[in-house]
Amino acid sequence: MSTLYGILLFGATVAFMEAFAYGMHRWVMHGRLGWLLHASHHRERHGPFELNDLYAVIFAAPSIALIWMGTTGGWGPPAVWIGAGIAVYGAIYFGFHDIIVHRRIAHRVVPRSRYFKRIVQAHRLHHAVETREGTVSFGFIYAPPVERLKALLRKGDRSGVRAPKGGSTDLHD
Ligand SMILES: [Zn+2]
Ligand SMILES: [Zn+2]
Image 1: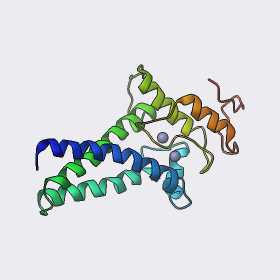
Image 2: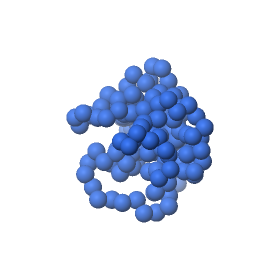
Image 3: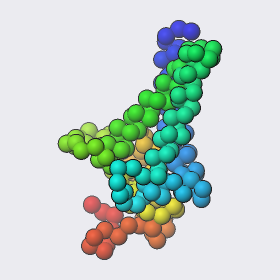
């Protein structure tokens, strides 16, 4: 297998993982069963971990299996490129989502580019809602324009919208 083909497969896997993560987040993690773990991510965390972190373990499993089977199990290079794509998507997600947005590791990074600001704001809007239903923005490395997300959020069921300290649920900032 040529390296070029491998790199294409790798890139396609990273893109596919964004679509896959969107679907999982929207329909499984915010579904009745998946919410059992994901609810912990929509509440205040006490301690370094939350139940939702188990999803990282679940998503890592196919990546580890593919790289393992590709290197020692006879599945060959395509399995390694796909496994690496899943792993790199996981690393990007962890960097943006857990470190930049949720600050699980202290840092001084301030999002300056338009793209960066947009994905951070989009995910904050996802967290404006603490209930299973009624939230917006399920993807991560792609996010629709923030204004569109705000409009969607205003239109939706507001019962789960977090009331900020002042008691207002105004979404303008
Ligand atoms: Zn969520
Ligand atoms: Zn989050």
